[in-house]
Length: 171
Image 1 (cartoon, rainbow, N blue to C red):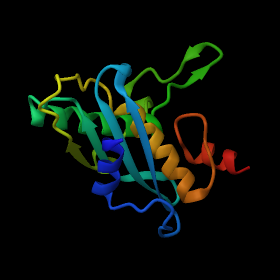
Image 2 (image 1 turned 180 degrees about the vertical axis):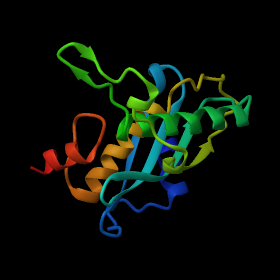
Image 3 (image 1 turned 90 degrees about the vertical axis):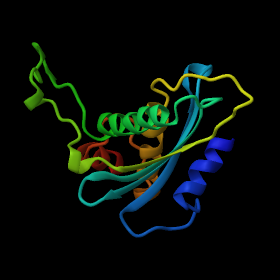
């Protein structure tokens, strides 16, 4: 519960408050592998004409924080990687197999498309340290999908959340 409150507070978001047209915010939460860090992410998106994640706030509880910079770097990288998976990345196939066989044919998030990310650490010095691992990925994808719903009122259930997927869901 504490990470959810910290992520919402860091973002300044008031759930239910309308934002500008074509923008939205959403939240995602998970406990990594049910034994490691707790992570909540608030994502801010714009949808004009494609879905773009503009900002993200992640709050994490890894118990006792031994390396604050290490945890922040791990979480920030996880948010950016998950943003790429969620809005762009897709292996392409035809009847014969995989057609995206080079980096040029595989879409990934570019530096200019990466959201600004803020990471809030909840230090619990009385608790044992828990791993951070890839704990930001799931909550980030959920936050982006929920922000899309906030912006447009549609749920897209298949990744990546491309313009074609969004139009199909509006359908």
